Length: 497
Image (spheres, rainbow, N blue to C red):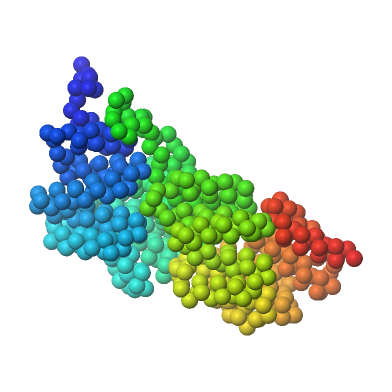
């Protein structure tokens, strides 16, 4: 005969809810137990409370519970538990923008775990070692740490840690230009994710990080595929609500990874030309991201600014860029291109120089770096500095390394430069247009058509130029890219004349 729910001890019910990842119920029950004067939660239960608080959007409560868990493990002489909790505190403080606290807890985690018996916890310091070595541009040390993490993960037999270690290894390879091997490892890591074989925390982290890696590597096909899968997972029905009278926090959990994954979806939709949906999704993402995800919220505002700029809504774009800046992102190269559209060429040049001097875009963010170089080429040509345009286009070409999206951007930049210098541009621009059309990225396609039309006109082929301009105008009008559509219409008038 089943025992009535009210007669099952609260802690037992809470632990069962945590094991099922029914986080709203676990939070409510653990808070109820924690408030009871005759019972104190042990470190294991406090760890679960920290997870439950985070999943229900209570970041500060999550950190407070983890601090208590870490102290409890340390008091009990459990170095592995104390080291693991310290590592998660370092991770939490880093996300909250408190680097000094993060560094302190990471140091403590390493100290506790270096003398602990071998176990899955050894993955965590190796993980941090790989990230720190990458930040210091030490590829050999980063690769050694990633392999150390993978060995520890495989010894542990934990599917979650194995998948995480493969993702870390893939990130190190991608940063160091080993694109094919890095993407293959990322595919391997994502296999159990898409199969639903991992915990919610690992699933969400891997979706968010894999999407970031794909976009930084300019791998649009993978980004499209995993964005759809991530949003389906984020939107899937969660566990049932906490039982009636379950206490504080009863109800369904809004997946805390939804906002971050939605930001990546916005960036994919932007490339695909679904600008209306992308702008709406950017607004949703800003409302969904947790307080410790300022970087993701900044990315959403910046993406909205880019759409508004290309549509000619310059005041709205400035507002979006300003929000991105307030959240810690330098809004380049979008703001420079906006200043160029306003005729403020000095501000455009200065903005790009500052972004490059500050290394605002990390070197491993190939797509971000390519966008900066493409903008630099455009601005340099607009202000009559073909030498700088040539340098930017050459760097962009070297960066492309066979990635179709980057090859299309580099070809467009080289074609624009050749056109400005009066050199043969038709072959380069035709190849670039073919790449854009294969991707497909409609705005890039239409911009390449505009340049190709100018090259065809320069070669005396007015009919071909008119065809390209007509197709470009049609695409710009569909995107509501008003300034570009007006330019295409004006040039069509010239062609007709």
